[in-house]
Length: 217
Length: 188
Image (cartoon, rainbow over all chains, first blue to last red; front, top):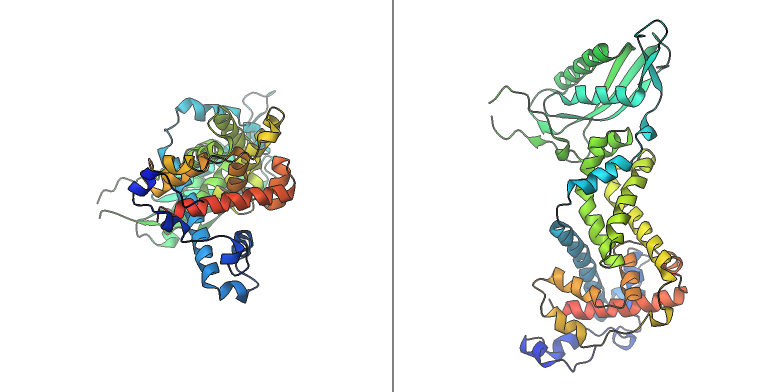
């Protein structure tokens, strides 16, 4: 950039000297180009290059590159906060466009309503029953849920596997939470399906964000 | 202490849980993801595509595609970058589709030197200054810079995306980097 700055820039206290402080041409970067430095940064500064690591000019330029990167991610996030809350129409359009069949899974038989008619519930709908039941346990959200076994054959033994997370910690023991989840899911499946549920395995997840502590006691 | 059980809202759920549920057909969980990352994806798409009706379409298409691909996601906790990657690809598809109508010869016209600093003075924050500096760049330079720095695409990918030789992409990025650094240093 030229040091000949418009008057109003100088009036704002940005002098040509300030802008020129950081020179980005190879003759001022100990022979490196700014692009080599950007690639070096992308490669996690490996393998180490002493001609860059030991050059104050290169280090300054690397700092500047890093600042611009951080700032551009920050600017994107800031912009996102300023985005208008999108009308529900926009979201509804997405939700109606997604194909529900995509995750429906197998057909699980229900007791026949009449002698000639066989009714079924999709595996996806059974999972939904499991999730809703698990979610009724205070502070818990169910994540993954699988049905192991031949759910398409009436009476065949089925194992339900559930992964859940304590999102808000109410101080109960892990065992108590697991037992509550298991009971809620077992009850719901007996109410809504004819599946022969042999076992409900509940795995508590501890990875990721720590649960929120209970705020008032 | 109240004895009323308090159901946890899905809006409080972590990404991992939401992705697992959505991958198993939970539309409500998917809706939370749409609300959580839709704005960021729109900001990104707007940076790449400029202000256009395409922005909303691209983000909607991204979510519809994401719904189908969710069960195959490797790391559910990294759904944000996964979504950003898809929206970035979709933006590039749009640019390709538009390319026929663009004047290729005009692609790397330099913005007059004085124009950006003038506008930068109006910026109220460094973030805004950066956004203005980006907007002042010629579109190919801006796109190359965004795809590289925000989208994490490689030089080869960007060359393919923009239909330009790799050497041209390197040149665009070189100018863009110098411009961004110089302008942002004035804001320190």
